[in-house]
Length: 76
Image (cartoon, rainbow, N blue to C red; front, side, top):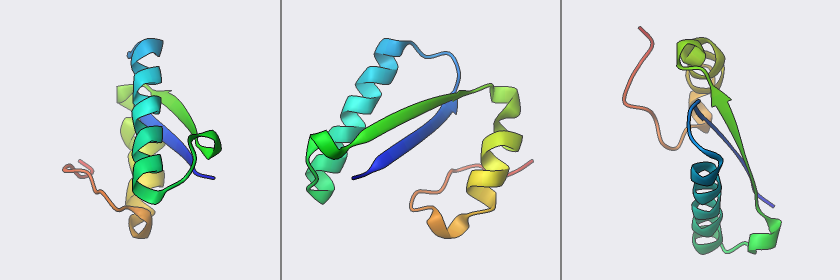
C-alpha cells in the first residue's frame, strides 16, 4: 500500500497535480506490481524561498540513506 508524498514548488494547477498523481500511481503499479486501488499520492506545495529549510535540509540532506534519486544541487 504505497503512499507517496510529493513536495514541489507552489504554483501548479490542480489539473497538473492530478495528472502527476495518476502518472506516479501508474509507475508504481507497473514497477512494483501493486493495484491502483492501494496507491495514494499527496502533493504539498512549498514556497520556493522556503525550499532549503522546509524540504532540502530535513528530507534530503538529513536522510541520504532514503534517497534513491538524488537532486543535482546542494545546499548553498
